[in-house]
Length: 406
Image 1 (cartoon, helix red, strand yellow):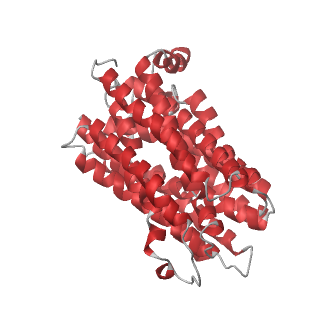
Image 2 (cartoon, rainbow, N blue to C red):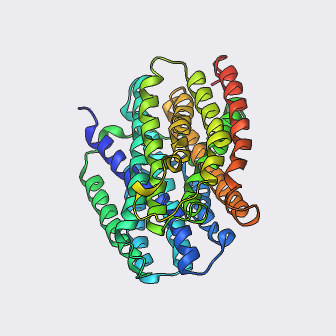
Image 3 (cartoon, rainbow, N blue to C red):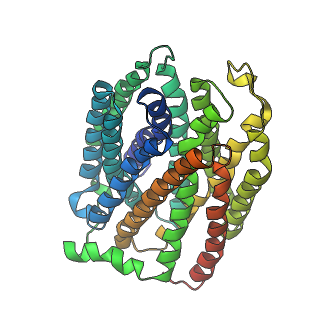
């Protein structure tokens, strides 16, 4: 198959960073217990992860083709390998900040490269949509694995045992580095702009378009919702459902698994159904889950929980929100990226990464503040506000794209 080595490399790199990026919810929980920080202080880890993503993407996205996608991804993998080893020996909240800052810088290099390369190894919009959805779906598999991987190394009687997972993650990052180093990459090269100044200005030119403005607002709102729930679900399970720590973390995997399944299903459904109806159905269904299912989960009385099978079925219902919010992000990205010339896709990817990072940071910070000041029982109800705004943005985006604004 054409470009098969590159495609495998894209999957591997995204898989590694899925585990690292979305372990932030687990580390938030561990930081409260091991390092003596409160909810608001712990939520700063999301900012240490996301702000470097935004800053690095802003400066390198438009001219990353000049640097080379392979070199950028190799640099990212090398950095996180070292950061994982540092976290093991550092074992402090400050080291956790350094870890996620490094992961953020590295992921900016990885994500811009991956999204740009999707456009170079696919030939049609359908291929682009399918590869985008499957890579994002595989990303969710990595997230789900994290919720089992960390408990596998965690002994609640030994507060430092969980740090052993970082040796595994360092090894996984290094293996991905080696695979990428040896894969043939020549046929994926793309051309850059006339000069670095022109490359850098492309993002600002794109921001002048109404389509881009509505699109990045949509991305911002979605990631605010997704990261707010993903990062705080382990804490919700511990403080509201009163589950043991390891089970709280594993329970959060249901959200990641449902996100993965939702994105894989979306890749099939969107071949037959217009994207606007898919996204509208998804966001309305998610809102209904918050309105009708979340109250029953909050009011659940859980006793003597030793395994996942001891939890009443209603306890598994709210994490299924992932099935409905899952298709939103890859579909929005594919709709816009596949319509752009390939020389502009790196710049648009930069904007996607920047506003995704800002949305993730704000979503986690707001949720952390709500957990502390409004109570963990009420925090997730506030997701209805960005969900409503996101629904409105879909129809504005549909109206603009119908006019071939790009």
